[in-house]
Length: 50
Image (cartoon, rainbow, N blue to C red; front, side):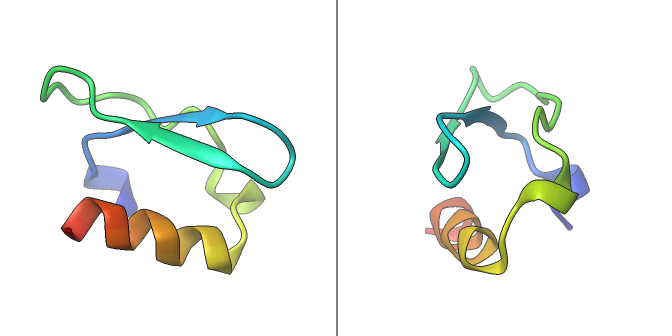
């Protein structure tokens, strides 16, 4: 579940999000999940699991 993912989201613009791992610490999801498009979710999931 994304709620448990240890990542930090930075909104670069309306359609691009970047993910930074922060010292292996739990970071808040800075972007509301309601603002993330399904295509972004897929990218996020890929980066997290690969």
